[in-house]
Amino acid sequence: MRLDRTLSLHLVHPLMKMGAPSHKVALPILMYHSISDDPEPGVSAYYKTNTSPALFEQHLRCLNSEGFRSVDLDEAVRLLQQDWPKEGKFVVITFDDGFRDFYDIAFPLLKKYGHVATVYLPTGCIGENHRSFKHRECLTWKEVRELRAQGVRIGSHTVNHSVLYGLSWNDIENELSVSKRQIEQVLGEEITSFAYPYAFPQHDRPFTEEFVRLLREQGYQNSVTTVIGRARPNDDLFRLKRLPVNNGDDMELFAAKLDGAYDWLTRPQSWFKMVRHRFGHAGRRESNLAAVPLAASPNSQL
Image (cartoon, rainbow, N blue to C red; front, side, top):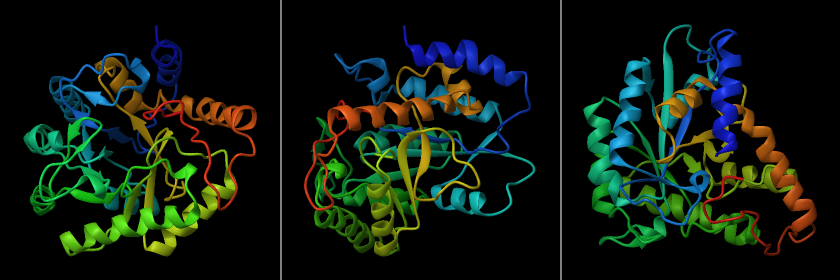
């Protein structure tokens, strides 16, 4: 039994339905990774990053039936910065890691149902020929150019998909600048959005403040994280929350996440990270020294 699912569906969502609709004051930013039939054996349901093509298509149908219009990250930022529209329901669909199955499977389905997406690339995994990351093939630069020409928004996901919290500031700066520059050279346009890989250390305020300063310095205008929740108009554009989606998101849980019934996990997630930091890794990060990664596993959202 998944406690997050049980509480979201049988406690939080029913309580929410007794109140006013929440979709007009919050923006779901969905976080997908791979779209394939890989069952990810040995990985617990919460930490899976794969979504089957059949389930992904059901998600897109759900978005349409519920009246959601997808926007890319740049348009989402404009919505968050301006007065929130009185009418309409909006969603952002993002994909991390630049897997080839986005080109082969996800993008055709997105076109079929009239949706747009933002794809974040770890540029060290993208080449003229297919390279692999996490035992999956990644996009080529030719495919990236084709996708951009058809409206897919592209963002940076570092060069090497490193655990940034374990790097020196010089190395972090290189991950931010080199990846941005590589994509800009290929596409001939400014890259303004960044996706933080692995667990975002929101408990460490000095780190996150310095990290945001570096993002701004490199010319980024926004950043999405692995912090759970929906984005709201007054949120920091460099610490945007997302809703993780995987093969465990059947239609009931998926719809509940869109409604905001998963947002309650923001605080437990933050508390868990703080406890791990204080009792497991306290004092191991200095401003210019490497640190032990916080994530419990490479795919951890916690």
